[in-house]
Every structure is written in structure tokens, then in C-alpha cells.
Length: 292
Image 1 (cartoon, helix red, strand yellow):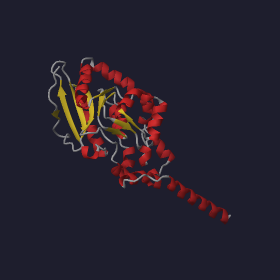
Image 2 (cartoon, one colour):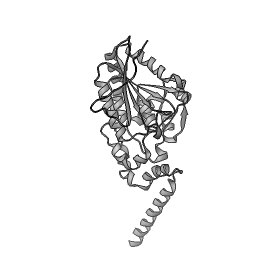
Image 3 (tube, one colour):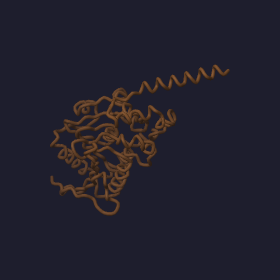
Image 4 (cartoon, one colour):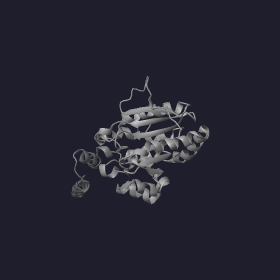
């Protein structure tokens, strides 16, 4: 079965800086697919609000294009991506928590099935973006994992408990709390991905899955996708829980330490911060008791 060449989408509103947005069509089946590629390989495709803004425009277009049957999310270069840009997150994550269209919601609200095409590192925000997708195809060299607690980046949105639906509660907590990394084969075994292929077979494998999607009723796929995704609507959006437990997280020393340590390329030192805070509380208590 033959596909047309990828054609970059151009025109007003598609002058993207951080993405490549392309479409191609199937000569025999009819219909086509859209591909959204984060194109920052020199920075491990790290995401900022600008990335998400461009993703919103691409997803909006693909979902309103009646000729498109599926959307592929990819990363340029050797890696799918390493999550949010930590240098940017140190200053901008507060706004990201309340961004009106977080990247995972673009996927769960998409009318078209979404496939993650993963190679190399798939960490942090890219990892939960991949497991939120309807399907995930990975290369043999793929590495999966979360890093939030290592870099003082709290996460409490719907996509955290979503992982329990994918790999089970115990494995989900292991991944999020211990920040371990997993090989492609381990990811396949735990149900984190659908298929593992050689690096040079990734695009062909994704094309094959897209051919299967284009061969069935697109309307039925839209209904099924919405049915699978609707169960997540009851979970809180990102920032609600962390805002209640630590309303000043990004102004606190612990909230700054992880990102600062990452930028300075050193291990984070969280417990000395807790020790200093305890000493300050003890001193305040002693002063209070002495004044009574």
C-alpha cells in the first residue's frame, strides 16, 4: 500500500518555530494522517509553553480536517523527548500548571486517534504524553521514566492516576515516585507501549498501524476514543492538589532546588533544606515560649 510524501502544512497560523506539522495521504484507502513533531533535537525536544501553544494549533487543525484519520506525535533527532525545559520551568512552571490547554488534554480531547512514535529518551512530560496517547510504538533503544521528584517538579494532574489504568497502581507509583528508567522491552512487558521495533522500522510500523485505522470507520473510532477518554474527566487538573498542599511551592527553597541543581549539573540537596526549616521552626518556638 502506498503513501504520498509528507507535506509540511503552511499558511497563516502555521509558522511554527518549535514544531514540524505535516500531513500525508493513502493512495488506496483514502484519508490521511497528520504528524506533529517537536523539533528541538539539540535540547532533547524539551517543551515550553510555546511548544504547547503550537501543538494546540496543530491539533486543532488536524481534528477539524475531515480527511485526517489519525495523528502521530513524534520527536526530532535521536530522542522522543526529555520533558519540560527545566531551565524554563524554574521560572515558568507556575504558569504551565494553569495553562488553558496542557499538552495531555490535547490528546484526550482529540477526536482522532493519537499514536506516539518513540525513540531514545522518553522522560518526564514526554513519557506521560506518550502513555496518554491511544497507542505507543517504540524503538528498541527507547528509555522511559519520570523525573519530577528529582528536579522539584510536582505533578498532580489527571495524567498521574491515568498511568494506573495503563500499568497498574503499584508500577505507576514506582515509576513516578522512584524515578526509575525502563527499557523498551520492560515498557512492553508492563503495557506501557504496544509494540517495540528496530530503530529503522519505526516509521514503517507507525504507517502500518495507521493503515489499520484508516481501513475502519473513522466515525466509530471517534466514538470509541471519546468513550475510553471520558473516564478521566473526573480527575482534577494539574496544580489543584499541589496548590492546596504547598501553595507557595515555587517560592520555597525546596521548590527551587531541583531545577537549580539540574542547571548546575549537581545532585539536588533536599534534606539540608528541610533541616534548616526545622531549625528555624524550633528557634521560633523557643522565642515564642520564652516570651510567654
